[in-house]
Length: 219
Image (tube, helix red, strand yellow):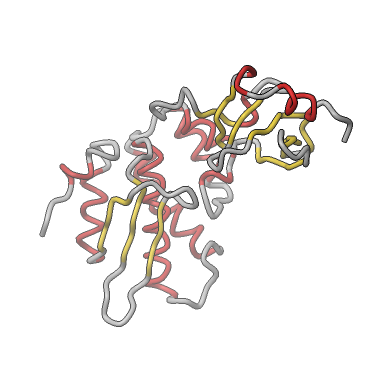
């Protein structure tokens, strides 16, 4: 039986690595460390035409986010083993599997206190992604590295300018329930941004005066 603990310890808390290594061996899962993906933190693929279970996790997650995502995907694997495709992907069966798999890590005190408390709250009703739970997402972000340039929309001051990956620049306006009203500089169109959407702060001097005048136009 292969021991993946040493390699896994590069990405998750060392105390958790032997447990995940055992899961990989017991399930025959193909576990892959993936490049960064903007649309997902990890994924699970069920066996097909003789292939084994497959799980991939983004390489650039902080250790606690990496472990939580790994548990999330293994919950899909165990749910598939019991129910195949007869249940919803994030239905009550998956939620039950997720909670069952998470408890040992909480008992071992692998997570820092603030993360553990956020997980306990999240486990009352686990969602399709840990990013959906704002408390857990915010807590996990405290342990990210090299996040100076990237901010969340909610962390920016009112009227701050920010950009998104495609280069478009916006100005943050007021909050509407759970999302923030933001105006695109070049078009003056209004968009709604999630509170924890990651953006890049833009200095005022980098934006032409004409664009700034547009932002201040009544809408």
